[in-house]
Image (cartoon, rainbow, N blue to C red; front, top):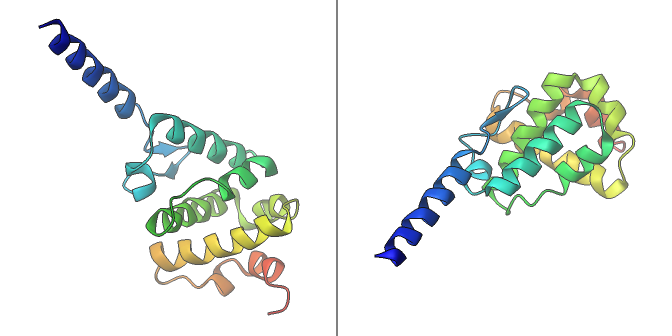
Length: 142
């Protein structure tokens, strides 16, 4: 009987912890994405902190966001969606100022995330025209 109570208690604690994940932070939607659905409480908290930091124009947070484990495939499309939402929220010119401080590897990652985020979630938007300045900065030979 005691084993059953302990097991129920653990299940209750796990339920409470996983139900405390945020679906939205600072107006940026993360709920409803595979990235949200597969994240633990700790991963969700880290993601929320990186989003908040990026909105506050912290390039280290943006770098952390670009290197966040999205699990590949659709999770990375979701991360691209999150990044495009941040660009819309902060404005392209302010976001560009943060992006200028990134390493070349992070710039390459950012370029890819913007492309898939727009492609997957905003079918009517074209990266080259939607974020013209960012596109030119991240694709100087185009």
